[in-house]
Amino acid sequence: MKLGTSWPPSWERPTGVRERTLARLVTMPPIAAAVMIAAALAVCWGLVWVTGGSQRAFSHTFYVPIVLAAVRFGLRGTLVTSAAAATLAGPLMPLDTTTGEAQAPHAWIVRAVMFLAVGTLVTFAFEARRRAAERQLARDVRETLTPFVVRQVDAALVPLVDGVLADNTFHTVFQPIYALHSGRLLGVEALTRVDVAPYRPPDAWFAAARATGRGTELELAVVVHALGEAQALPDGIDLALNVSPTTLADPQLVDLLRDAGRPVTIEITEHAGVEDYDLLSHRIDELRGAGIRIAVDDAGAGIASLQHIVQLAPHVIKLDISLTQGVAASPLRRALAGSLIEFAQQTGAQLLVEGIEDDDDLETWTALGAHACQGFLVGRPSGLPVPAVSHAITRHRTTLARRPA
Figure 1: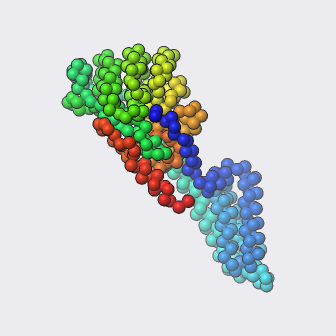
Figure 2: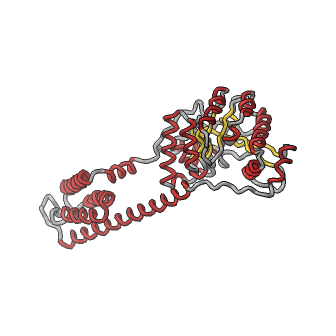
Figure 3: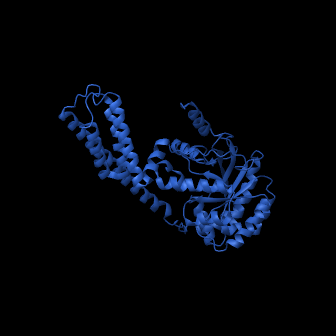
């Protein structure tokens, strides 16, 4: 099975009825909102009247229109609504409607003070929450849209590149990719580890290789090695390989992958813009013709990755860790996630989230409707074989199934 070919969309909106109702109220035209609040005041007054007057506890229902006014109109609307509620529940409401006995003045004055106090506190609470959300949004915008900083070439690695290529002093590890709706293994991503001191992250070695003009050569050598190791994978399990646009344009890559004998996805890993999308698209068409799938890696990490999505129409959109972690607490990440999921649905692409390291992110992305995930929570990079099922995902689904409806 290729990555994502049989995942059913689990498009579940995480927002509840209460949140949707409040959102409609906030965007409602002022006159319509005022009419609705006035109607709520009238309903509350009628309810208190038919239940016997202010001697009953139903006078507390007036807090409902007061809160609605706080949400829609802020402090000024809250004060007006609180005053109206105090009048309706005070001088205009008997203590006992059956006998006509009036309330004591101090009783409805105390109630009026409570209406005003609670309304004011609710208004301040909503305002504080709104400002906190704006600050969070501003931070997220700075973090998400800050241009990707290109790694500086480590000068200590440059003279070692030739030896790495001559002796193939690197090995491949595989990180599993699992379906979010079932926890079943869909594929693995091949990751390179260079076995030469000083030990550095793989991207540092690839940057050094590019600095010496041997970047494509190293990437192709890594692809050859990964394809050989992947022979131990079960049939039908997808192999994801990382290549830069420069290597993608090399005709040798097509020849290597055409004879892979297994499902392969090429992840385009480049944060910088592509100068010639026509040339790249031609090479991608060749890969598609050979049955190779295309993925855009690190989507959401900057403008370039989003341009790759639009220009290349990938089979898989792989969201960057800067977007996938902490999405439940971030308005910007959540909005961008929803847009990318909707885009993926409309274009037939699959959405893969990386960097899943805690249960909250796993639950959020499952609810949002992502198709697959990878990360330390569901499976760390390792040698083959990798587990056929993610225990973290199956445990999560079992927990959901046990929750009361």
